[in-house]
Amino acid sequence: MPDAPDPGLLAAWTALLRRCGTGTDPGPAGRELLRRWAEPQRRYHTTEHLRAVLAHVDALAGHAADPDAVRLAAWFHDAVYRPDRSENEERSAVLAVRALTEAGLSAARVDEVARLVRLTVTHHPEPGDRDGEVLCDADLAVLGGPPDAYAAYAAAVREEYAFVPEPDFRAGRAAVLRQLLALPALYRTPTAHERFDAPARANLAAELAGLTRA
Image (cartoon, helix red, strand yellow):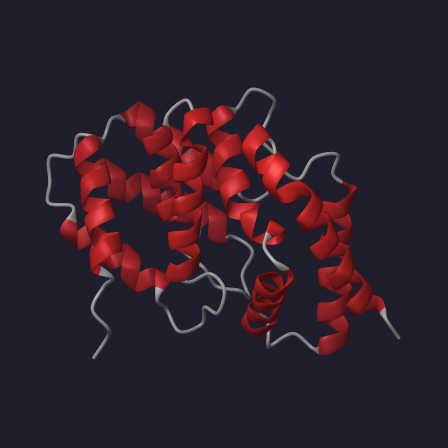
């Protein structure tokens, strides 16, 4: 029998949907989302990741143009997650459109949420995209955590990709890390940049060194 959904997260979802003007009971959609976030193939992209991203969105909410749209996007951004597939963000965006339209939210807000979910493919918001900056910074905040927390994150990512042979994983992961380190700014909001940029670069560089060590 599946575990009961986290009551705190379900209450947060319910309050969010009601603030956004839903005309339906938020419970069924919230329970379905939490079921997805608890799927067995997940090791990093779990309800703990959802909870962390929502907390970071709250901390950065003053920078956003529509904080509740960003919160909705956080709920959906990894709602569809299969590590062996490349279309997770698109499928998550489609799920968001369907669920939020059924909930009676405005078309403009639904479109914004879907746009934000799709933005997590690249984590590269355009200048002035305040909602996109908040979501991407919240999603990438894990990179700037303490070294032990970063190591746990990296290990969980490896577990999600256990089906990939070690040499291939090392090469692919190293390419991702180099791409991140080459960015002029990992974080776009002033608060996240000040708090996370330097430790994130140190964490990424340390992981890269470990992956490329003979």
